[in-house]
Length: 111
Image (tube, rainbow, N blue to C red; front, side):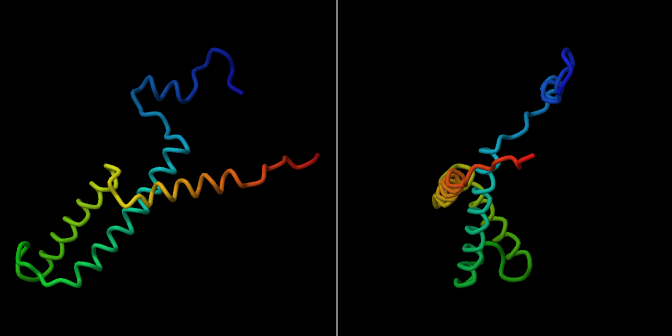
Protein backbone atom coordinates (compact mmCIF):
# COMPACT_ATOMS: atom_id res chain seq x y z
CA UNK A 1 0.00 0.00 0.00
CA UNK A 2 1.26 3.46 -0.93
CA UNK A 3 1.32 5.99 1.90
CA UNK A 4 -0.91 9.02 1.41
CA UNK A 5 0.74 12.00 -0.22
CA UNK A 6 3.45 10.05 -2.07
CA UNK A 7 3.17 10.00 -5.85
CA UNK A 8 2.79 6.65 -7.57
CA UNK A 9 5.24 5.33 -10.14
CA UNK A 10 2.70 6.04 -12.92
CA UNK A 11 2.26 9.63 -11.77
CA UNK A 12 6.03 10.15 -11.69
CA UNK A 13 6.42 8.63 -15.15
CA UNK A 14 3.68 10.84 -16.57
CA UNK A 15 5.22 13.93 -14.95
CA UNK A 16 8.55 13.09 -16.58
CA UNK A 17 6.88 12.73 -19.98
CA UNK A 18 7.13 8.96 -20.19
CA UNK A 19 4.43 7.02 -21.94
CA UNK A 20 2.13 5.00 -19.67
CA UNK A 21 2.63 1.26 -19.56
CA UNK A 22 0.65 -0.59 -22.24
CA UNK A 23 -2.52 -2.34 -21.15
CA UNK A 24 -3.06 -6.07 -21.54
CA UNK A 25 -5.28 -5.43 -24.59
CA UNK A 26 -2.52 -3.37 -26.23
CA UNK A 27 0.02 -6.12 -25.54
CA UNK A 28 -2.35 -8.74 -26.99
CA UNK A 29 -2.97 -6.62 -30.09
CA UNK A 30 0.75 -6.07 -30.62
CA UNK A 31 1.58 -9.77 -30.22
CA UNK A 32 -1.18 -10.84 -32.63
CA UNK A 33 -0.10 -8.30 -35.25
CA UNK A 34 3.57 -9.31 -34.89
CA UNK A 35 2.62 -12.96 -35.40
CA UNK A 36 0.59 -12.07 -38.50
CA UNK A 37 3.56 -10.07 -39.81
CA UNK A 38 5.91 -12.98 -39.18
CA UNK A 39 3.71 -15.32 -41.21
CA UNK A 40 3.32 -12.77 -44.00
CA UNK A 41 7.09 -12.30 -44.15
CA UNK A 42 7.70 -16.04 -44.35
CA UNK A 43 5.15 -16.37 -47.12
CA UNK A 44 6.75 -13.50 -49.07
CA UNK A 45 10.18 -15.13 -48.76
CA UNK A 46 8.82 -18.45 -49.99
CA UNK A 47 6.94 -16.84 -52.87
CA UNK A 48 10.02 -14.86 -53.92
CA UNK A 49 11.96 -18.11 -54.37
CA UNK A 50 9.48 -19.23 -57.03
CA UNK A 51 9.99 -16.29 -59.44
CA UNK A 52 12.91 -15.32 -61.64
CA UNK A 53 14.82 -12.17 -60.61
CA UNK A 54 13.61 -9.14 -62.54
CA UNK A 55 16.85 -7.17 -62.36
CA UNK A 56 15.16 -4.34 -60.47
CA UNK A 57 17.49 -4.75 -57.48
CA UNK A 58 20.59 -5.83 -59.34
CA UNK A 59 21.49 -8.95 -61.18
CA UNK A 60 22.81 -11.21 -58.47
CA UNK A 61 24.40 -11.55 -55.12
CA UNK A 62 23.71 -10.52 -51.60
CA UNK A 63 22.65 -6.97 -52.45
CA UNK A 64 19.62 -8.13 -54.43
CA UNK A 65 18.43 -10.47 -51.69
CA UNK A 66 18.95 -7.72 -49.10
CA UNK A 67 16.88 -5.22 -51.08
CA UNK A 68 14.16 -7.79 -51.71
CA UNK A 69 14.05 -8.65 -48.02
CA UNK A 70 13.83 -4.98 -47.04
CA UNK A 71 11.07 -4.36 -49.57
CA UNK A 72 9.10 -7.38 -48.34
CA UNK A 73 9.47 -6.24 -44.74
CA UNK A 74 8.29 -2.73 -45.64
CA UNK A 75 5.19 -4.14 -47.34
CA UNK A 76 4.46 -6.46 -44.40
CA UNK A 77 5.01 -3.72 -41.80
CA UNK A 78 2.74 -1.34 -43.68
CA UNK A 79 0.00 -3.96 -44.06
CA UNK A 80 0.11 -5.02 -40.42
CA UNK A 81 0.31 -1.56 -38.86
CA UNK A 82 -2.44 -0.14 -41.09
CA UNK A 83 -4.77 -3.05 -40.32
CA UNK A 84 -4.83 -4.17 -43.96
CA UNK A 85 -3.25 -7.55 -43.38
CA UNK A 86 -5.04 -10.85 -43.73
CA UNK A 87 -7.23 -10.35 -40.69
CA UNK A 88 -5.38 -13.11 -38.89
CA UNK A 89 -4.45 -10.84 -35.98
CA UNK A 90 -8.12 -10.07 -35.32
CA UNK A 91 -8.98 -13.77 -35.36
CA UNK A 92 -6.12 -14.57 -32.99
CA UNK A 93 -7.24 -11.85 -30.56
CA UNK A 94 -10.84 -13.13 -30.71
CA UNK A 95 -9.62 -16.66 -30.02
CA UNK A 96 -7.52 -15.51 -27.06
CA UNK A 97 -10.46 -13.53 -25.67
CA UNK A 98 -12.73 -16.56 -26.00
CA UNK A 99 -10.19 -18.77 -24.24
CA UNK A 100 -9.82 -16.19 -21.49
CA UNK A 101 -13.59 -16.09 -20.94
CA UNK A 102 -13.74 -19.89 -20.89
CA UNK A 103 -11.11 -20.24 -18.19
CA UNK A 104 -12.40 -21.21 -14.79
CA UNK A 105 -12.03 -18.53 -12.16
CA UNK A 106 -9.01 -19.06 -9.98
CA UNK A 107 -9.95 -19.44 -6.34
CA UNK A 108 -7.44 -18.36 -3.72
CA UNK A 109 -5.98 -21.33 -1.87
CA UNK A 110 -7.72 -22.09 1.42
CA UNK A 111 -5.92 -21.11 4.50
